Length: 305
Ligand code: 13P
Ligand code: SF4
Image (cartoon, rainbow, N blue to C red; front, side, top):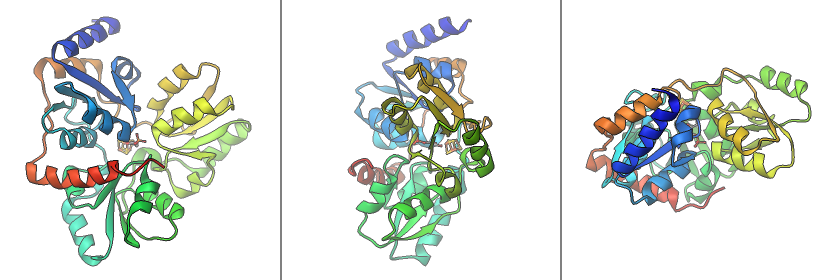
């Protein structure tokens, strides 16, 4: 079946099943094209909670669908590819976090949403890349355990110097790979371009940035800034909407290899199959869900950075 027909069939079936199609900003272009909503982790969690549709098809990775299931247990949350995980989220377990908490009983645990429900359940408050600094500032405790992204953790620590921060040493393989020499080379090739970067990149990379923000923050920055050229330091799925919404501007990847294999795993065929079979349904055990929900709700009550 050609792509357009496949997309039409998905839209038709989604309407019949009362399903909302959600896609993260890193998904394949053709998947983002059929989504009712695209966005960053925070925006998608909020939209999933707000919708009155019965079914949410989450084109993203497992922790995102799990967040939707935590926030909206009455809805059917479907992940088209059960094997779409996040390597960073897999770098911390609830047991590992419990052990670290024992060593620092006076610390508040601030956990990036890129984590399992079981890890969220062991956390005091969650954050995303778009509210991390505000969340850290909102916490009363002086000592913070920042989990699991060491790079986001160091970004928070730099912006909230009044806190004592302890870092979990996890990282995103897609963002952590970006090197200073690569950025300097692209900057030298395009001296007029502004460099916008995701806080999952290493601190030395963030030091070179004109703007540090979440994926959705990049759409806002590119649209509002009068510059015509931007160097992009995040996963390449972001380019589709950046180019569509800013046809007069140029976007250059800081490193062409910045792509997340699990974000790109979901095809249109997978989305169609998911709607036909109503598989794979993502659920969270109630005892874990209730605790994880508290950490997410506390985050949602904090205004954006
Ligand atoms: P955002 O919250 O900026 O969408 O990032 C999610 C993610 O997985 C980044 O790698
Ligand atoms: Fe996880 Fe990185 Fe992929 Fe985001 S880009 S889903 S943090 S591996």
